Amino acid sequence: MPKVYSPESSVRKLGDSQTRNKTMNIDDYYFDNDDIMVNKIKLRTQLGVPIDKEISKNFDLGINEYLKKFKDITTNPKNIRIPYNNRWMKIEKPDTSKPLTKAMNIILLALISDFTVMMNAGLPHFWGYNFDKNDLIMTVSLDHAMYFHHNHTSTTEKSSTKINFDITDWILFELEAPITKNGRGYITGRFFEKSSGNLIASISQEVLFRSQPSKQKDTQNTDTIDMSSSIAKNLIFDKPFPTNFTPSSNHNPKPKL
Image (cartoon, rainbow, N blue to C red):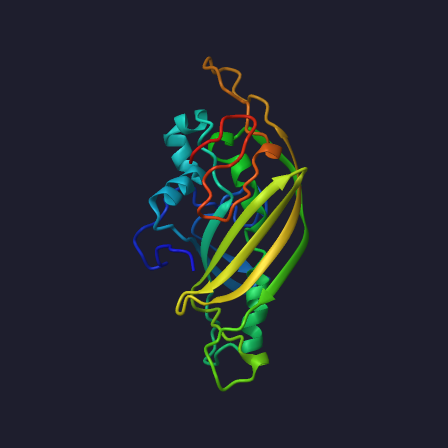
């Protein structure tokens, strides 16, 4: 299980509250927010802040208010937001005295397994050094696979019924996109139980997206704005996260993040 601060911790990332939480755009970066799924299911989510200071610092590259306050970070090619993210998630308990069935827990986890997945592939291309330099034209998921794992918490139940977790308690969703090129991104994710740290499910998804370089929007600004970006085909992350902080690039010398 990734080392992050608990959802009850006072350590948080402060930034855009993401009021457009109904969008699914790949260039949207979600923070702490609640959502309503299928018009009745209340989903609570918040960013899982990494305990590691270097990873936490890299997460700052995706915060809107941070970018407004420290605009100089967009001038440094080393400031590439790695396509790695952690998010605490849970379903608010329904107004009933009965606990959710095991089947309903599995169904609800499958429902939220597509939440914020696509945007993870876009983090290096729309944030940090590349902030506001690429315009997203369209995006769509091509496939989505989910795998449920045994919890190994019971020795009395049959093997087929060992999948056992509580979706109304916090679950950590770890996402990474090791490669995005030729208009496609590949994302993998893992769900961990907060109470036990067990890996309870995994997902994989391939996404298609089309983008183009942004045009300089502020024609009245006398400052020279560097609109060149680290192009998508050169931002390839070929090592496991979160230990990989060196994206290979032909556009710049290898940035050490």
